[in-house]
Amino acid sequence: MAELKYAFAVGAVRTWFNEKVMGWKYRHSGLPSQLAHSIGQAGEMALSKYLQSKQIKFSGAPVVVASKSEFRQDLTINGKSVGIKTAAKRSYLEIIRRGTSYYPAKMLDGESLRVLSYPELLIQIGVDSSTGAVAILGCIARGEIMASPTANIFSKPAHVIPVVSYVSFDDISWLQRLGAKE
Image (tube, rainbow, N blue to C red):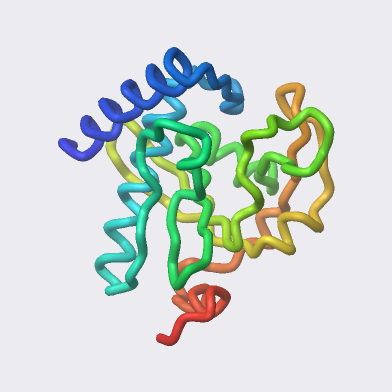
């Protein structure tokens, strides 16, 4: 539970800095920014622990950045960008029920110029912020994200990704998509 408290503290600092100092605005599927950043931080921390347990080398992006040039995807594994999308428990269960997840469309009208390019691999996670439980839906490659249809979600274009498109995370073969040697 200490890790969850830490994630929520980092989420508060990140929100304050990004929005008040940097002047950035976010869309978080209807969640307040601080809660969304906190849940995202919890997902990143959980995935980092998992990768460490599997002895997979990676580097994380800075939690708080001082300029847009420092902004990058959540992780780098073997020189490849890895994005992590973490949903709150309610949203994660909705993804499963609906059979689709959403990922911001990055090359369509209406997107911010500061938005990162598509990650080479995207990992979808769910976090229960009351217990700290984490579920990993799976991962999906950049090309599959970009090929998925788009819809306006919270007034912004987003890819609608079928849950069946995600590769199971239990099988480390997803790492081969990043060119790693097992």
